[in-house]
Image 1: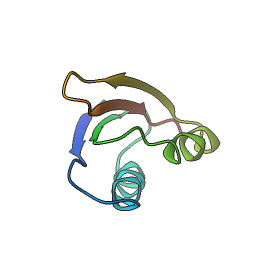
Image 2: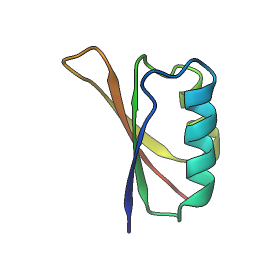
Image 3: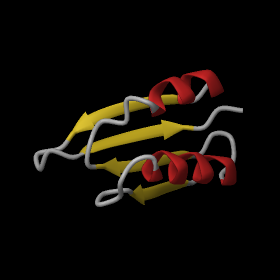
Length: 73
């Protein structure tokens, strides 16, 4: 299983969500993807749930959000 990191800071919506979903399409089931966003990706969560992926969000000290997604498939 592989782990990937995608830094989406500095991007304007919906670019972080598009980049995240594109990367998830590229990786294998069981892999994890950690994304770092300037804001909490409220519209991404339902999309991840619908696709069956699990996710965990941690607010960072600098105000950004780190979301770790495990691809299911």
